[in-house]
Length: 296
Image (cartoon, rainbow, N blue to C red; front, side):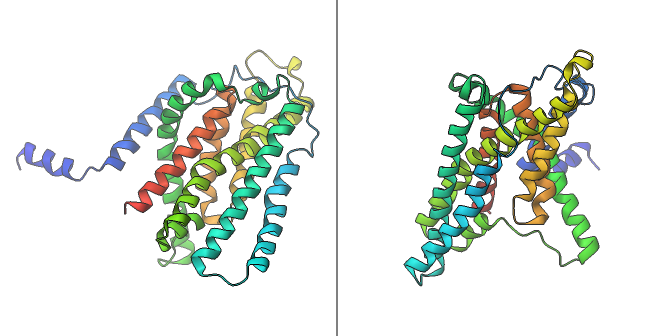
């Protein structure tokens, strides 16, 4: 067979998704080589100085889950019977309001608890442009790993539950594909692309990851370590906060992919010292997922 015909046939099967994954694999491979398989990736990372008590991250978490659930139940009782899409719209309005309140609480707690206040927390507006550009590269790098986690979940799901196993879509994705009303779709997109990344990154990365690392630093004082070994507390804090981030989502089938994504978000926070970077990565990931679903 003509070699050029083989090349044409092969190239015709390549999709944009394949090119994106290949670029991500190359970037991830470069990162592994550059950081000695990740061992030196966080050698220069330092804990964020703060005076947070251990219970503090649970305050906005309780507001997010507890108060929002109660408010949703009360709103449904007050409003009464609604059509399905209207009920979904009301639920998302209440959830968005609860999330905004939780974000405000987190900001106030961070201002009171972190050295250098919000800058010490990682919200330095002077770095936004740099973090936004870096977020594209970070997301491209982790994309193949997230896809691999999804493929592995489907593979083992079919192995355990049979060929009928399917990963459920996120509830918000189901809403925008099930109901055509633009008011609901726009609200879901705002929640997924803006509100959720702000809340989840300030909570799981900003508060929980910082708190976990500080606990590890206290039990293992840095003065006993050789120079450049602070990654010994950074990586465990990233992994534990990523696990909390994953299990906070209701669908267990999404946990492996969310854990991989959370690890990337936590790494971006520790490496850059900026919360805007994981916020942008999270936002871009959600936006890409929504665009993929809407264009199917």
